[in-house]
Amino acid sequence: MKSTEKRLPSFREVRNTIQRVDGWLTEHEARYLYSLAQYGPGQGAIVEIGSWKGKSTILLAAGSKSAGREKVHAVDHHKGGPDQAGLGYQDVNTEIDFRKNIKSAGIEDQVIPLVMTSTRAAQGWSGPIRLLWIDGDHSYEAVKTDLLLWEPHVVEGGVIAFHDTYAWEGPRRVVEEYLLRSNRFSILGFVDSITAVKKTQRRSPWDKIRKKIILLIRYLYILGRQHILPGEIRKWSKSCLRVMASAR
Ligand SMILES: C[S@@+](CC[C@H](N)C(=O)[O-])C[C@H]1O[C@@H](n2cnc3c(N)ncnc32)[C@H](O)[C@@H]1O
Image 1: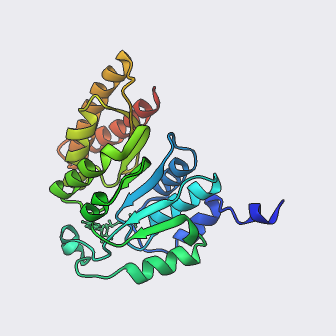
Image 2: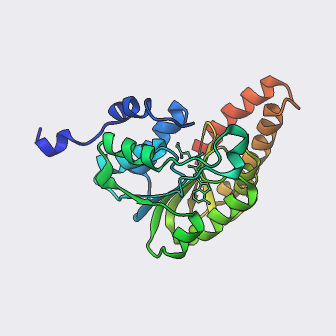
């Protein structure tokens, strides 16, 4: 093996690294982000809205780097957010930890930190994006703004993925209203709380039917999560969602 090949991070190595980084991703979500960055469709930059201390940044950058692909533009003002005040994450400063974690993960060269608000970063942005990961301010208006500002830069065939799309009202509603009900996106995956879609004009009649079924099952899943429907329905609908997402 050449010395350059040795430096490429496998998911297993990255998993050990991110265990030491504060954040909220599950193991399945971590693996999914890594593989979207590694093998996801389209060409262009990876843009992350909301980095916190770098957990998802490290996964995206390592996945992309392992395939010799694009850098990650990590957008975060690093001040937490009012949506997270109840969790004690308002008026923090995560930039030092973020930079330290990116460096110790060995992927500093694959990350371009944009320490500013999502709105300001979008105003200065002009290139194509192949993977847009939205995990910033979780309020409805903010998530909607993130999507509307950044989505036009996502290439045809590119991917938009959101975190926390069930328990948090903001991402849940934006995903439902702007992506799942829209004709411009096809569903790519549901992995724990991540919903991922692909931007595409080419949709088959089955795609449209599939989307309607998914919306119905998703609705049952959310009612199950809210304990309005029995737990069995929640489990059943979650499995159905996974099956339907891969039934393309
Ligand atoms: C849930 S955390 C991100 C978690 C991260 N993706 C991870 O995997 O650990 C949300 C982040 O969004 C950032 N944020 C909130 N509002 C923002 C805004 N308007 N522009 C940029 N970043 C914002 C916060 O500073 C916080 O670090």
